[in-house]
Amino acid sequence: MTQLELKLSAEIEQLKLELLKERQKYLELERILFGRKSEKRLPKDSSQLDINFDKLEVLEQEREQFNTLVDEIQVESHKRRLNKTTKKKEASPVIPASIERRDFILEPEGIDLEFFEKIGEDIREVLEYSPGYFYVKRYIRPKYKLKDNKSLKTKIHQADAHDSFIAKSYAGNSILAELVIGKYIDHLPVYRQVEIFKRNGIKLPYSTLNSWIHQVATELYPLYEVLAKQVLNSNYIQVDETTLPVVKDQKKRAVKAYIWGIHDVINEQLFFHYDQGSRAQRVVVSLLKDYKGFIQTDGYKAYSIYEDKKDVVLLGCWAHVRRKFEQALKEDKENANKALDFISLLYQIEANIREKELPPQEIVKERKRLSYPIIKNFEIWMQDIYPKTTPKSLLGKAISYAFSLLFRLSRYINDGSLLIDNNLIENLIRPIALGRKNYLFCDNDNTAKNTALFYSFFGSCKKIGVNPKDWLLDVLGKIQNTKYNDLVNLLPKQWAKINN
Picture (tube, rainbow, N blue to C red):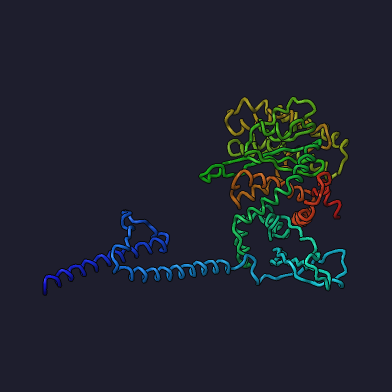
């Protein structure tokens, strides 16, 4: 081989090497531009992307071929993105086609359809619930225009859209009522209700159902304010508090919070109050404010602020005293039983009074004749036995508790409308304890406030024998069109009078 041939051969090999390098750079660039996100990383050395196509004429053809390849890759990539978008759009709907549809046609008012032609319609689907199954209401609103009217500015006639309790939502009132009743009456946590929906072919996230419940509470809040105001206008209320675990921090840990119950004994209504979970005396003060009348409570010290307040009479609870001595049975059965005998006599007198259906004046006479001597003897017995007990023993604590509250415990004797204990409010609080065992805790303070609101209404329904679901379903259909001054007619007691 001549020297010239050797030189040309060397140059060819060099060109092949450079061509290979340039093609590798192109492949890297293609991977960066069109590869998966995890692969779209820039080279560490930026000079690797500095491709000089004018360096060698031999590369021109290769570059054109590669540009064609790039165009092909871009087209395929675009098709792939379109396919993904199409698949997303074809995802199964929230309300599947298998759910029964019931059509409700809303025709426009004030026109004679004989002179109009239909040019279209709008359809809105709303998910509803009937005991045992789901169904869909289809609100169909046909559009009409005058026949033979070829004007471009012809007027379109159509009925007004169906009002939705939650704007732009497909949740019907019966679904909302079922959700709320499920959680606060049947004590079904929301996540269980999600599963119930899913078994019926309806896939809704936990957050959506929670949001619906919260929006129902928001709409009912003005009615809750009216209820609270009515209860606090009563001349005789019972107050108690109970625990309600609430998540308070970012670590999602539930803490022991408190919810307050206030029962209107005279009008058989109640409401619950939540104030950041506090049990402090400031809550009592802000809640009762300038209340005037009888307040019946247990011995919790927060209520003592009303002991000497003008126009307020504090009443005690004999049921709480009885529990203290029942606890002492395990330490001193003889003396604890003696105390329980005194208390049992007081309750027997009350049972006899109820059976006789005596008027208030006669009740006072019976209590003064029978109950007062028993309480006086109970006081003497406590004064005699207390020095013989250990103050920190269960019996010592029970005697100390009863003796310190004896004035409050005795006041019911002088008024035939007053009760011997706080059991009515305690019974009304019991559903909260059942709820605690099932949904365990409230997600936040707002959920706890919603809990107070719903238990207020449902407790009031229970007190007067109103079906809470019937009440709620009717109120959901009316409250948004009811003036504030007329809201009182939607409270359970007034609602029952109107609807019976």
